Length: 457
Image (tube, rainbow, N blue to C red):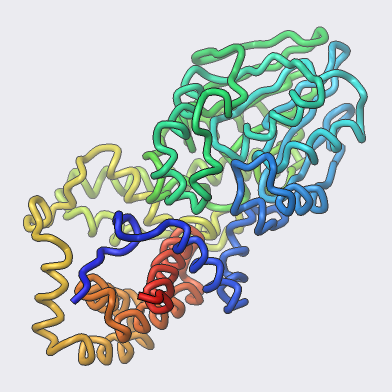
């Protein structure tokens, strides 16, 4: 029997898995459609850019971003550059341009061209709202074009950018990026030239730009408020759907600081809201209403989670017992596109508890492969277990996936186990209840099964 634990094991070749993932998606347009639904973050989709976020040289990604870029003037001398997947904000002042976020690496050339399509003024300042790759890796193109801006970010942004170097292998896996495209040294990053803590007010061209550090999607995130224009560049605090707060493959996020920031931003009464993803808002009442209901919804999740922990509920039941009442359930801003409300509850719980999930045997568990072999043996072999999984798939997909996993981790070399993973997880991805983050996890699992099934060995 082969007992390879699958992706994450040193026995698996990363390049083979990347190729297998591409083959699984290309062979099945329905799967690609599901990935695109949430993966575009409310913008246009670019498959090449999404798969090569760190690369400044990937030609197809650069061209796809160019073809999908649009510039919108939302206020005098104020533009939203809508790149595929992510946005950049440009303010023109008498001293030059203030650019808030620069997109992912292949977006750099399109950003330069977009800026020059509306202004010939020099780039005075670049602000990184946070250190995620899709918000600060396009700066290289501005520098290559001869711009020498001050680059401003919170102190924590430097640590986050360093993590891309230190954890490049892990992040490549969890972000589905080629590992050789992640930064390998300090020379691969356009570092902030000025950092701050808490609040920073910049005077540029006689105009105030207020930067406010409020941990949320990342612990280094800030927003930019231009009070003279009443324009708010809100980074990723607001995304037009239930935000990326419950991401099971990233660092834990700060829901309560996120709520504080949303209420603070609503109190500013902006007339234009320019988000890091998705469409701008230009009706003052709508802006306040959107920020407020998102804050209320996140507060509902936090309050439930804390109450459940205080009642001593087992951790899986903390999220399981979360209700999602009206008006949250039907509000478009709160649609569970990228993560679910229960995902967020799980992340909130993890901020207050340890890694243990309250199941006694999980404290010092037997190896997963040993558990799986025992379950398969009790089932009478992989064949009967697979048959039961297929019968369950029509009525209880999550349970069917558990059985598929037992078969896989018992013997990933067994053709029936491989086929079961491909069948059951395809159905799971196509299930309308699945969100983007879990879809990507299921797709990786299918890629491992496909790689195992087609391997010459």
